[in-house]
Image (tube, rainbow, N blue to C red; front, top):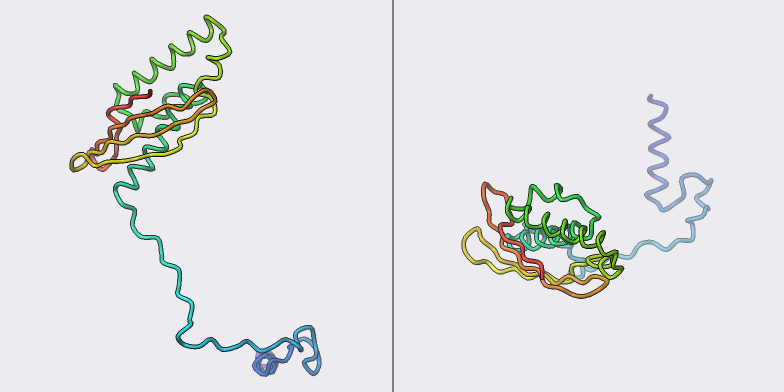
Length: 171
């Protein structure tokens, strides 16, 4: 243990002088490297600001975006409705389930290829939120799919520290 200490000390001394620790005389790959330049005190780069706390409006906007996207996927038939049970009010959930069933039934009845493209590849383009009351927000979203662009209106209420969508209207 004591024999390793002088070797480490010698390597430390070589590194302090700018010499390579693994080549004799310090002439190695880094021997011709320029010494780092000192940065003036006034030009010290500022650290990047840390991410601050999420505002309530930003939280509502994110919930709205995710829920609207998931709702469009339910209507397209690529997402099961039960995945929205935690976020949607039971009445909204039943309404969305009924609309999805109507779309599926009409598609199987007619076989219309235009219906098959309906709600496919939906993307939420923008979301706007507005605080109506304490713990109540209304939001609107623009959704674009293969066939058309549509508007979605949402009302969110906070109950027991959880945001629930109590109204969902898909245009």
